Image (cartoon, rainbow, N blue to C red):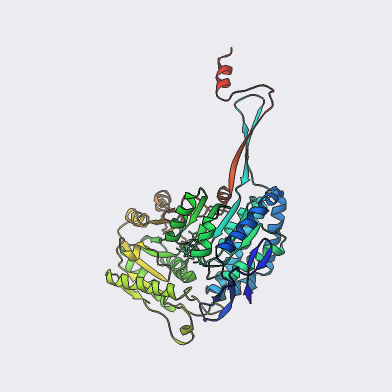
Length: 498
Ligand code: NDP
């Protein structure tokens, strides 16, 4: 099947006629051909979004919400089918792809409900017979640029709040997961979204993505992906006066104190380090362990990591799927070599997995390094694969300092039974997400999500904070006194009157 662009409510070929393939990373099977778009396709999509904006922003928000509700219902009905398709397109195991679809459902319903809220404020004026309020206005055409690791969840985090706030959207999904993006667009079409409110263009970031960021029709760029790409694209968009919201890389850690329930901590570490094959922005790639238990903890992690079954995520007995592509596998292996050169001790994995059926996919063994120095590259740079580095420390203060000392700031977790330590950590950890006695992953759609330092640029997706990205505040004063009243100035005069 050929997956075409969706522009102005029509499914259309790329103007240049080119296509690329979507490939199953576990088996190498080709899943379909996809329109290979260039700047002319992007410009057509941005034009369609700009034309649709006025009617969409004037559609009552509860009506916009009804369309989102219907989309949510379709997602519910098709959850299993979409999860299976997602496992085939990007490799993560079925229980995780079901979670991805569920997150899309949750976000869609949550933002649908916002159609009947979108609260502003009313507040007293300092002057008599004057009314003051603030309300949310849409911004215009939103460019949504997304990665492949959450092919439905992340797009809904952008598209649903953007639409409910009255914006129109041009969506450029990752080239590794175009089919799930196509499905999302067709679901919104079926739900009754008017033509042009959402447009989808497939194609390489360097061409289609770049053209979208540069488009004069685009008012806001909402990007999730790597820090290198995000920073560059953010600079381009800012220079053109656009709003920019960036969700980027992570180097997340699980801190384990000597008093912790080690079994529980290991559960959290295995899930956070090797879930999605370590390809989550919130993946735990560092374990910062108090010295007294560091070796015992390492042995427990290694024992569990070595038991993980690799394979096609569609199989019920698979624990960990493949990496997304060969380039990702080469990058992971290069970091393993860096770790060894840096003197860290390789305790598990460290090589590709190529026995039997695994030969067809991009598999890499769950990898554990011990005795890693906090400043080592292995402990500082985002690997985005199934590699975890155990860093020994003396106490909680040192653990927090090590945790905070990377260029990223997304998620941290602390395992302890001591409530005082827990609250000190909550106070002193400087990442956007903090978990106590749970791993580094587990976002819920109604809470702010995002990070500090190189992870973001000050915005938070999800929760009410998502609406701040996708709307402008408009402050409104209605003076019903029938005379000129001057703020600040007439207030002083009133005070001086007897
Ligand atoms: P990339 O930065 O490579 O790509 C992200 C998106 O940007 C893709 O759609 C890509 O297109 C596009 N893109 C690439 N280059 C450009 C460009 N010059 N102009 C415009 N668009 C461009 O990231 P990955 O897809 O590899 O995703 C992994 C990264 O995403 C990790 O760093 C991870 O931490 C981060 N991430 C962050 C999250 C967060 O919330 N903080 C959540 C999930 C992931 P194409 O696919 O065609 O290359």
